[in-house]
Image (cartoon, rainbow, N blue to C red; front, side):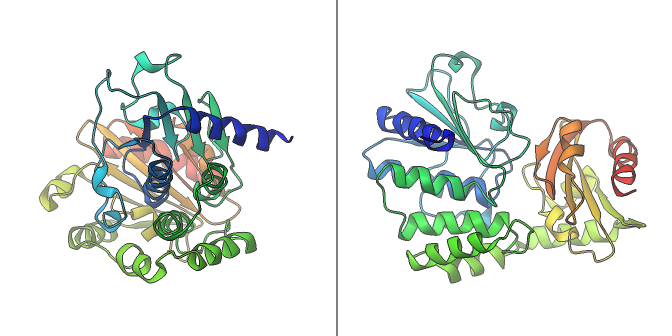
Length: 323
């Protein structure tokens, strides 16, 4: 038995054994986090389990149509009646957004399902595949290991996860195997056109206005592009701290840029930074150095201080990366 098979067996055993799992999506959830969490929820419901899905921030508008999205709760009490915690698409315990309680440690088993190369293996059982284009890919093996067919609504959730984390199959992680995986999900009943129309091609009005502010403040220095979004501008547009406006993916289209960064000022005195890069430039190293994480070409972190301080701290790191 290979190590990978052994870990998969341990994970399926955990899910089979426990009936009241808590499934946690990370703050400011993206399509991979929401899609995978909801796919696993559907599978567990089919198994007669009673899963609870939670995230400290609301489900984004362009993902709210997914089956089970309305079941999300924003927080859970420490004494909630659960017997297993599952952390989905997150690289460390801080990414639960405070939902995970210290009192659970060592008492309630923790299963981690992820694909970030900065993952620190923080669970009792860890299914972590950094080479995977999305967390959806290792999750499929887990769902199939439970004896649940990957079809229809489950396939739709997994297709959302894969398409969003590959930016519509445009990242370097989009291998022939990923394309075949997408084809299999569509053949299994995933609603591809619904995903395109409601997730990939649906930008809320306020987000589009926020893009206007961000693009107006856009700067380019050699092969580095960045924008800084002040809190006052967010408040004027009614944009919450849970909304990063998907600026990382927007700015990644700048032809001259090898590395990009977006800086968003938060109400708690921190600055949220999203990084994107062209192949060959590993921005995950910078994010991890700043106590964040992610992928080589897409990562992020939060730093304390003002917007100007954050820009002054990070720009030299970006310059060093592209030398």
